[in-house]
Length: 90
Image (cartoon, rainbow, N blue to C red; front, top):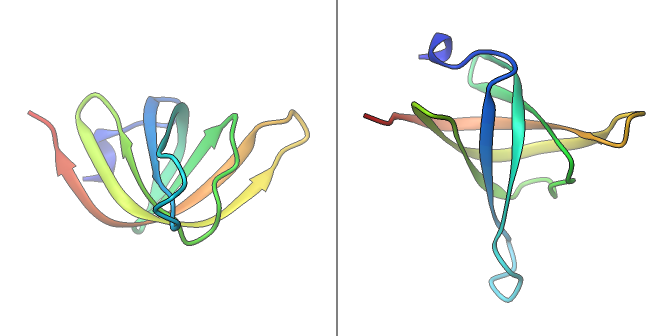
């Protein structure tokens, strides 16, 4: 199913905080890569490790857990996600 989303595709990222008292976050990013159940996203915001997220493109929904968020020199963040499941959007 990885071929359905291409590098550079816009994605809506929804963050479910580990602490239920913290607010839900949602923002946009880009897919950089998806291989072997690991999704690499580019975004303007950092996401805490081990947090559950969904990432939605126009035709796929990725469900997974953040492995790490690494800062880039340009101020953006590389977010690595271990994908538990993908769901096609019809």
